[in-house]
Image (cartoon, rainbow, N blue to C red; front, side, top):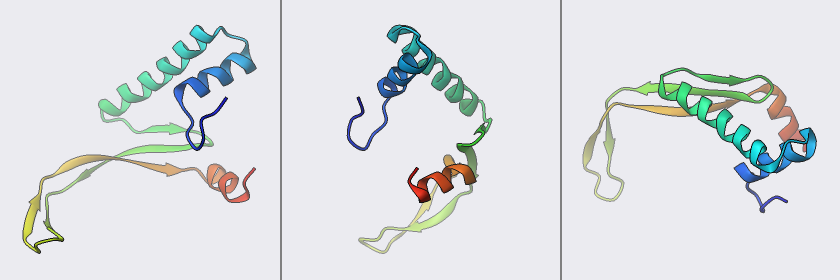
Length: 99
């Protein structure tokens, strides 16, 4: 079922299909709807929190000076918004114990 080392949309849809009994098409549509809703919320500047899993946070980074590692020349880095993920304690515990 799973490709090695990567969980895909198809894998999620297959899991919904087996556990809930929805058709494959309906399962994939549900996965797409959830991901679309998350992307929409992030696009509007909202953070996304999934209890027991983690939080997708948007951070605004200010302009700063960086350095080209090859030449050593200072280069301005423009301000930008970045997406970060903070895992919940429950997810961290599951990863550490491997269960």
